[in-house]
Image (cartoon, rainbow, N blue to C red; front, side, top):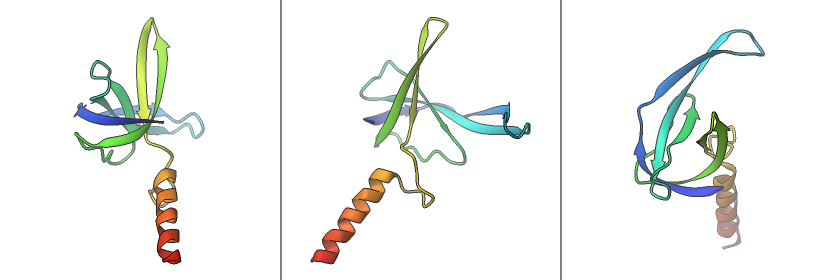
Length: 104
């Protein structure tokens, strides 16, 4: 996990594909992001619905790299979200805060 501050968000793109499990057409959105920490890199960020990222704000990302045809590509994703839309880190923080309130 790496904390990155978004300096620039590119234009969203829709990627259409055929789902291998169902054999039906499907799609997802992808956007490129640049960060203050690594201004020379573009990270691919994939999502469904709205991405919710804001320029100038810091997020904890799970960062990955892959090599293809001699070039390095970077990917960034937010930590897994619970059904409520809260990440596991945010969930732990909420639980800790609730315990502190309960003991007071």
